Length: 232
Image: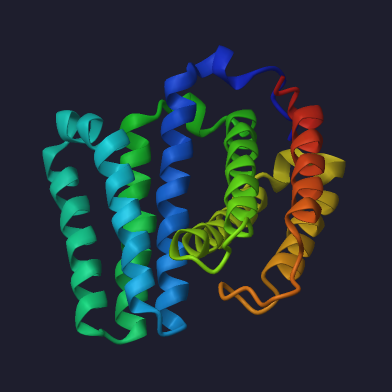
């Protein structure tokens, strides 16, 4: 499949790209929460669920509620149920099923409601969202390893970076039919970033990739996407 050419905002408007990007951020926060809970870090997991819920409330809820009040109630109820599961120590499988339903079926419905079909089907728009997500990942990782890296807010940003990286890998896999000759280099680069930055999962060990290394990898990925889809 040929890659779309030119800035996707010119085709679909900035709002569509913003909403797609926010939905990815919400999904990334849920990834972080799920993995922290699996690592027996329920309190930290709740922080990421609260962030996901706040992003939905601030950036998406008004548009959803104005078009489909039932869907909005289902999303709000899903967040509440996930938080309750975290507080009561629900089995991991139960929590992951709830998170999967919210991240998949419900957020897919939110995306379908808010984002025009032309933008959802545009690989160039998806590539732009991936590039933006990678930029947020880069900044979160660098902040997380800044001075006082053991402080809660620094740890939170590292955990956030993990979720953003997982979502970036998922988004890149969704672009394989349009990436052409860049497919293998992009997918391999993201796998390498994960192995270097988070070799044992969300709890990053000392000695994993420094911020400068991750920044260089992210910039090369963004440049590859910009060339392939002519995003700039």
